[in-house]
Image (tube, rainbow, N blue to C red):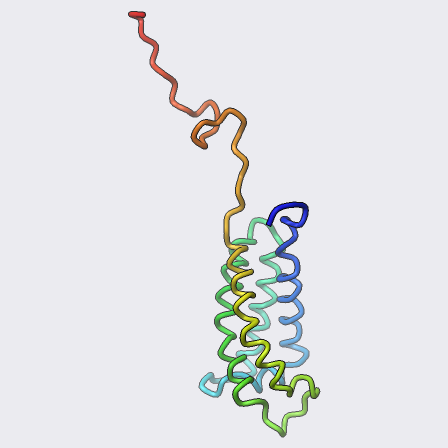
Length: 155
């Protein structure tokens, strides 16, 4: 992405991670209900994933850790995808008290394909930003570090 927004493309994803990470603690019961049954200790899985998501948000905010945050985001998005599929396919236990919007499998089905552009977005943040070459550079090496021609005394 070029232009004035280039330096800000990480902010919406970092915000999304921060909100999602906090939601894992404020709505832990809902998230535990969509953890696939083959994973042990659903509540622990929810808390750990909440910490991971908050860590992703923090990593994306700092330029030095942004690439790492992008990679961690890709891995996290792929790791939580089974929970989204489980929620879409099986819904939520009717005994669980959650807001109706969280029970709606339509939203769950929308989240399943949404993972793909989110993975692509996170993947884009893993790329090293292009750096401008110093003026006078011939092959990408800084001026002054290029090999100098040998001077001949016979000329």
